[in-house]
Image 1 (cartoon, rainbow, N blue to C red):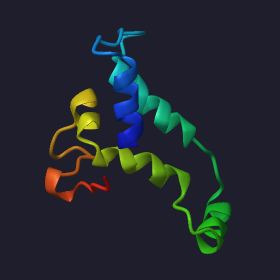
Image 2 (image 1 turned 90 degrees about the vertical axis):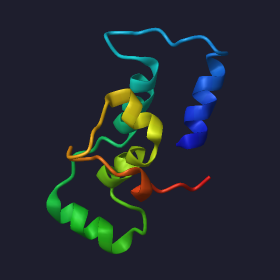
Image 3 (image 1 turned 180 degrees about the horizontal axis):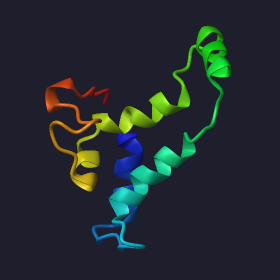
Image 4 (image 1 turned 60 degrees about the vertical axis):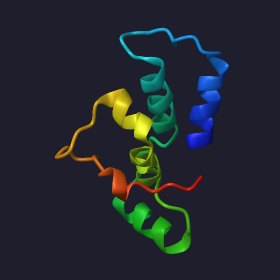
Length: 94
């Protein structure tokens, strides 16, 4: 996700992304990622999935954006809000 975010900014070539439908470029980037993981699944199917598949359920994958500082800047997430992670709790892979 971090590499994709950096690549997105590289395509802008230093120019600001346009605001479209009231959303900044960064907001659209993160919303696009989240939309990939939208699913509707019955609880029984989810239970089966987590017992046979080593991948995290889709709704958990979408939450990986909480580990990227730019997500906080894009949406203004603050301490005390549901998905906020303190900077020292954010996972950094690369």
